[in-house]
Length: 245
Image 1: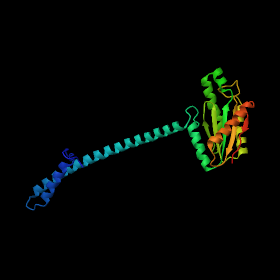
Image 2: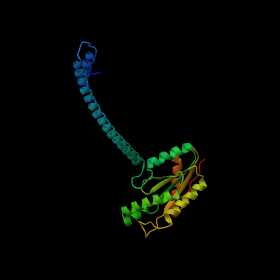
Image 3: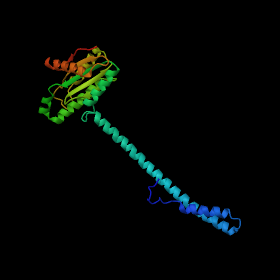
Image 4: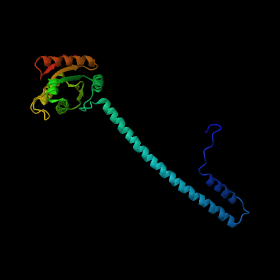
């Protein structure tokens, strides 16, 4: 409803409305001649044709604007999906980032037991120092690729630090998780990386197991301590942390 004192919106079909009123008056007047009736009908036809042209033009414009809005809506959804992906994934490797992997772990522990594998690339600083950071980045990407090929099913891989990673193995028994961690270790160390052909890359692993609704912080601390045991024990090995029921 327009505000008081504001000009009324123009009537786009004022001429047609006036022509219709004249035609209705002519129809209801029995004293008019046939010529007057024809004139009124012709006038009505002219305005009806104009109304049809304007209606078609408005429909075309509406269709065009709807298509443009659909394109914009699709673009907004695409950008929103990109932003959501970037908010949850590591920009270098595409693995889940620290926040996302921890959030995922908490959700999984609400649903059931969880085995957690943490790993750290051995002597990674020396790789950066000797070959440069681009080579170091390539090593990190290749580690994630090899981890992805070594795990399967519902496993989730996250990069939680520079050269540190976490793998979530939901509903996986402790012994099975240790075996899968050993498969990951072997996948990394078994053959040289294409980006570093003259040096074998290895990693140290720690594994913990936690029953449903256990605390992820505690699960991570136990796996992390097992990881440091592996490093203290000579690296390139898997160590088990304490399982908590």
